[in-house]
Image 1 (spheres, rainbow, N blue to C red):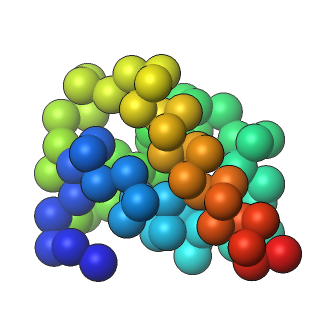
Image 2 (cartoon, rainbow, N blue to C red; image 1 turned 90 degrees about the vertical axis):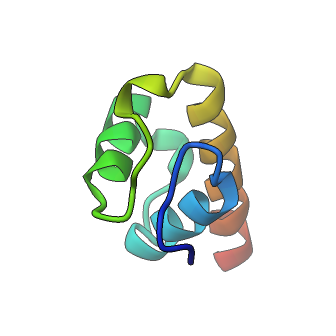
Length: 71
């Protein structure tokens, strides 16, 4: 996993979310909660205010793929 994460690291973020929340169905997670989890990571260096629904949806879909592969 990269040292620094930003919003453009969709796949890396999705993998990390899956690792930390393996039993959570990503489609049940609110974007606000997912956003809070991501920006709380020490290696997240992106601007918390520069995310949007499109970015969060892309992360959620990548996370959902990991979830489906893992279950």
